[in-house]
Image (cartoon, rainbow, N blue to C red; front, side):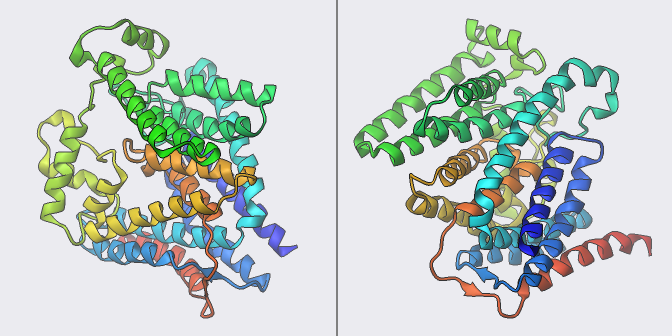
Amino acid sequence: MLEKLSHLIFIIIFIAVFIIDGWGLPQGRSLSLVVLIFAPSILMLLHLFTKKKIYIPKIAIWFSIFLFFNAFSTFHSTDFQRSRDYLTYYFSLFVIFIYVLNNSESLKSIYVKVLFSLGILTFFYWTAFKFFLSSYFTFLIPGHGYQLIHPFAGYLTHHPIGVVGLILVSITSVSLFNKITFNQLIIFIISLAALLISFMRAGYIAFFGALLVLIYKYRKIPTQVFVVTSVVLFLLFLAFFMVTSPDYGESPIKRIFNTKINHVNVNNKTLLNARDYYYLQSFHAIVEKPLFGFGPHNFFSASEKYIQNKYVFTTTSTNILLDFMVENGVVAGVAFFYFFIVIAINAYRSVSLHDEAGMKLFMLYVSLLILFQFSYYHGSHTIFLTFIIVGGLIYKEEKSETDDYKLTLIASVLIPIIYFIGRMAPLI
């Protein structure tokens, strides 16, 4: 009974974060942070009452290394309060990962269904928002750029609904590999259309890159064919990006996209979209502070210091590895990135082709991992939480350490206490 209650609360927490943060509701980003900081203590206490052991996988050492440097980085941050908030955020995600890993068999199928349903519901909300709500209920217009409903600023050159499209095509593509049904095919086509017209080029690369991995795992095509196909796809993407970039003049394709998605500034879309400037800022910042970085979620301080001109100020490098190295130091960034890669390799080897739910999650994990190399959506509470949960659901380890000292429970209780002490300190 308590175990089922624990799973229900976990699902409710995920739905709450997805809606209030992912839909960009008023104060949704700060509220979702509070929800995530309280979530581990609730989940771990319920897990304790079920009298089930907590197992900590060996891979957790890499997450722990990241958290260790993250803590020191917080004390060196130029924006201590912001970095402290995100220190507790990352600790919360660590405990959530452990919780999910320990309940993966029970949660896997229901989580896929919930995530799929939320994706469909988000499409309906986006449609209502675009044609009705944004005109009559202006307070619903998102106030930050990490949501999935509306382009936050006029300079954006893609629509964030493409991320929802990516989630759904990643899930439904596995269903179509197993059995083609009319409903799944329609959802796949609609989701793919949303991804395509969003003009989110990072999403294109993420989906087709993950699809190649999926095909290779399902069909066991020869390595040579896989490599050649990958190179051809890369060249096709490069050609597409070049002909749709104003650096290379007008093109019929660009005009089509401009007509279909006049909600974003397609005319400003360039081949690299200032990523070369962002990467250069990152490299300067890493050289200056290689050990502890500029502080969790404090990339903007590095950008402000090494900005080349006023048009390339940024809060992210649009690359997850560079972001974590700039903010938390080289060791922390590499450790966390290695953690993600190990999960992907482990899941590729361990998830059975007959485990449809597992394959859907594997496909989604690879899609998001690729997306994070070219975009800023790892900064979204909704998307990064999804990524961490999916990682916990697909990772398998035969021998794990038992948390006999209830360290995860202690950490989960301390997280909200530290958060609120930090919040109250300036008022004392």
